[in-house]
Amino acid sequence: MGEVIVITSGKGGVGKTTTTANIGTGLAMEGKKVVVVDADIGLRNLDVVLGLENRIVYDIVDVVEKVCRLKQGLIKDKRFQNLYLLPAAQTKDKTAVSPEQMQELCEELKEIFDYVIIDCPAGIEQGFQNAIAGAEKAIVVTTPEISAVRDADRIIGLLEAKGLYNPKLIINRIRHDMVKKGDMMNIDDMIDILAIELLGVVPDDESIVISTNKGEPVVTDEKALAGKAYRNITQRILGKEVPLLDLEVDEGVLSKLKKFIFGK
Amino acid sequence: MNDSLIEFKGNKEGLLVHIREGSFESIKISLNKKLKSAQNFFKGGKVIGFKGRTLTDEEKKELKSIIEDQYGLLVNETEDIKDKETNTYEDNYFKGIEEGRTKFLKTTLRSGQRIEYDGNVVVLGDVNPGSVIVATGNIIVLGSLRGTAHAGSNGNTEAIVAAFNLQPTQLRIANIIARSPDNEISKPLGPEIAKINNNNVLIEPYLPKK
Image 1 (tube, one colour):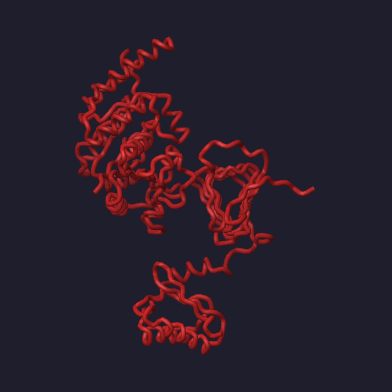
Image 2 (cartoon, rainbow over the protein chains, first blue to last red):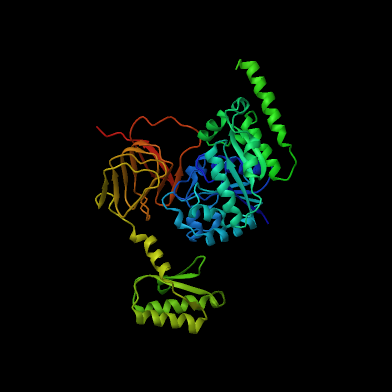
């Protein structure tokens, strides 16, 4: 029996899709059977980030409407054979699926996979309600901006109202240099406001842009700092204790090293 | 050759009875013969519909009673199976490839837009990734084709897809599906045509014969 985790944020553009792709791939790298579900019907992206767009024949709407079988809708990843994608429909909208149908779908997927990771759309309307309907756990993604943190706070409230208690937090796109200068919110400030458990911190990294455009999740990149951050997050999801501070120290040492080599 | 008038075809839902043209009497005889030849095999089976020769209600009733009462099969006709079957039935695909109804789109098709047409489609513009064109005939794009295109969607393998810049996410002709390669490939230099050749989608440069 698998676990259903929804990745959500409220605000758009904070990195839900990137996080979904990387956590899904990360768990698959650890040998788990994983399916990532794109619940952003009408604005699908997860397939592009994973580089699987050209393989889509059926989508989530076809599956819930029983136009095709579940197995036909699932797309096998080109790198990891235990990773699958259930893509969103692009030519429909959020109302094409109901929360009840999503619940049913998640139950079905749970039987087959160890982890079901759902990529939630931005906003708090039906798309959000659909995405969280079948979820048992939630991960809230935010960036160190006051607007993103405010939206994350709202989302945590909505999740609790739906019975999804103790969501975990991922802080994305943090820039150590700016935090040090006091130009960016620091991690403690954000945890202070949101008061939920921190799952990981992902640095702002150019390699994310490169890997997204290539359709290869950064978690597979041994050298990228963001890749290491996502690998640590994966370990924590698997229940292993990876000290959160480790990453920060790592960041510090690495960026110092970078500065030493590249002169800035 | 009475036997050849009736054929049973099985699928996931049950059995389909294919009936060729012929007098009703000979159809009845061959049905009886067919069912008798494998009585144990057919017993308890489910017939989901009749295909081929059109039957009057009276004739259908009679065939049903033969199948149900004498051989112990269940007849349960479902409307949509009948519809679906007639769509894919060999004689029913769109044949206006050389000359037929055509839709002209004087716009660029953007992500999320879907055009379905029973005929040929000509786009005077681009077809962007995330958009879909489904046509029972040919698809011609006077611009870049980067989305998904499905020509000959109800079974015509003669249908073609042509574009000034042919770089589709996915290309389907009849029931053949081809996808773009995963590695970056060089841009096509001129117009290209895609068609079916030996059950594969073949893309070749468009070279007008001079």
